Image (cartoon, rainbow, N blue to C red; front, side, top):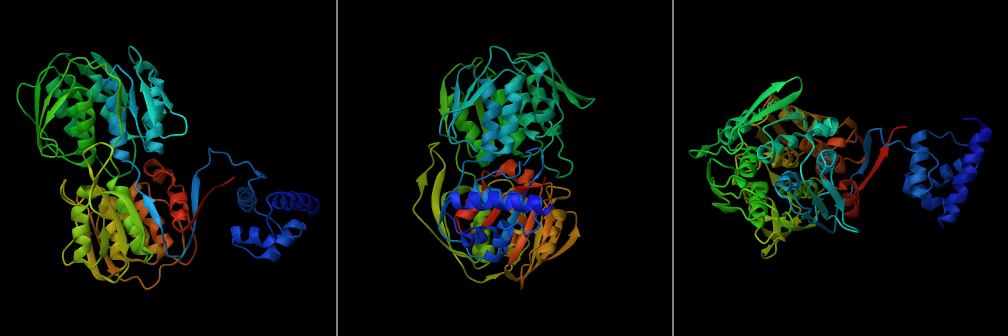
Length: 510
């Protein structure tokens, strides 16, 4: 930059600072620099990077540099501080995506209350809008109103949005009642290795659906009106396959029995929602569901999904890794009981309030306050199981917690082919992680000192958050690059951690 240009920028920064009523010291604290550096900037005597210009503009609420939103978003973390205060758990991401798909069953207006405003939800809304569904966020809220067309236009589907989410596979259950033939783009989402859709296709054949994969699409052929002649036994107790079958069964005017069904939190939320639509479901919370569907659904319905147990576990891990006492409000305790029992064996202490009920009228909640203290490694390996076992999405957080515990802990992720590999990224922030094979890592603690680092975010949601939380414990400034995958599953996570005393801010390259 020329001296004249630097002087002009310095004058703009000085004027904006004064307009905000800030001193040079105030601005320096926001930027993590010295008062003398700010003085040099305002005098035109300091070379400025584009990133620094953007940070100054953010601090002064003045756009000196325009940041294009086509660029990846990154997080800057100044670690080493303890957290304090209280935070509410948001509603469930996985319930939200299922309910958005289930809204296709209803010819009436569906209003989903307190919905997670995350990128995964945005992608599904884009797909729904592209096929003719009208959606709008109600003013000053996170309530989404969904109004379907008389008939959806699948020829107009937003292929790019559909391919950025695996949720589109759950359009099969609702759509098989509407079309004798249709196409859906291949599903995307996290990079977690091969996640076969075969269990979906096997189960949905009972409703007359046959699918062939051709040229990047699922080509579906349907015998409309066909229903199951015997109980459907799922070949895996998966969440999304259970949800897909439930949505197919919801509009089948007969009895559908589903065995080896998932009873996880998002499945229960879907069941409660379908009951609001007039569908009868017995066995909610068990592995055998009996569904009495209705051929046509046309009701105006309001529903609020329950709170997200994975987010609750994320916040708990944030407290552990920073040796902090925080209160996590609205914790869905029934979906964290195994996790908490495991943590107790490791020496963790916490307080909980008496239970109360979520807005869905069913899910049990508590407020949980963490109590810092020494931890020891788990005596046995930590591994997931279908609900009511330890949730597969909570497993990566135990790698981070194990980094604070005395001894060696084995983390065994038998579900995904390569997610355990992403946990080795913790070595970049000082954690002793040994990869045994694509499914198992050994974590040895306690970590003597977490260290600041610059890391590219793993292409999988939960390992990405684990790296972010580890950075909270690392003194100095860390950078986590390209955090779209985190935004898929967490709403305003940087801002909410900052409200607890962390220092996390977003920025983009220019």
